[in-house]
Length: 478
Image: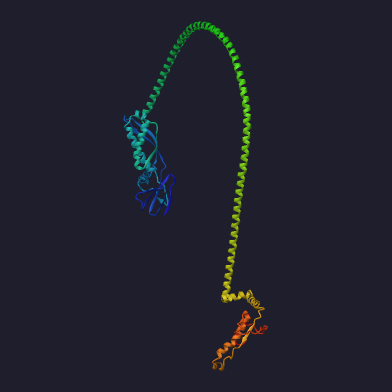
């Protein structure tokens, strides 16, 4: 599989599997079961000298140059690729060689196009006279292009330009030579006639111009004399009228000067009166303006003082508000930071406690459980020594008094055989009991029940401390 790219003035023509007719593209992948060729759309020139005969049976040679090329449209390119690519005998002239397409030839295309142009041009010339071909050169050119283009459309070709040169004689014919000579001689004779006629018109015109000049000069001189006399009469009349008018004007000027002088005096008096009145009004306005100015100055001064006081109060209030705002913000910021610091301290304290708890947990696992950990901590903090000191301090100086009495026989066969032993024991225990109550509480039994003996000094215990304060023991002392 090859990837082909066409030049800017070319197209790729691909045939083979999966393509119905041909495929026109600028770039394409070409598979091994497909063929690729290049077609150029660059226009090419056809120069030909056509032998034709007019409707008057006059033969001539028509040199022409046609610029023809494939039309850059998909349908036209498909026609051109299918009908005109390859050799003249239909054999393929192009293909992929080493994976690269080769360009097509154009020799047979030029022969086909040349045949179309000659045939269509002869058909058009055979229906026109020589005079029509000369006079209607542009129409003849348009007909040739139109008819040839209609035939080239079926091949996908287009005429870009057509240039029809001057008609020429065929070998053995001198029609255009004689026609040119005739035109030349006719033009030469006509030029001689035109020159002679121009000279005649020049002499006649010169004489006519000279006579007319003299007539016009005489007429102008007579008219000038008449006009001169009229102008002199009119001048005298105008001079008399001018003198009369001058006298009238002088008199009017004198009267006008006198009237103007009187009016000036009257006007001067009026102006003096107006000046005095205006001067008085000006003085009045000056005094009034002075008072008004003073009032305005006082008003503006009071206004400025009031504005200054207002501005001072406003700025003071703004300063107080700003200070209160800044104090509030500072207090808020301080409280926020204190709260954050307290939170951070508590957080760190909690983390420390958590770490200590984790450490104690590991120690408890090592020491055999919580009981072992508690004993270890009590040993570390000397808790046992402190407890012993606290107990010793608590019972220090109490001087306990211990009373021991015996209520009778302790066991044996005698106690079991005597039925009055319980009553006896009760009465035997009553005196010590009353004595102990008296000693500990200060309450004495009634005199009819028992007479309490006099108190004796307390005895110091010489053995280990049995109880705190005084106690009752049924049996021997221990």
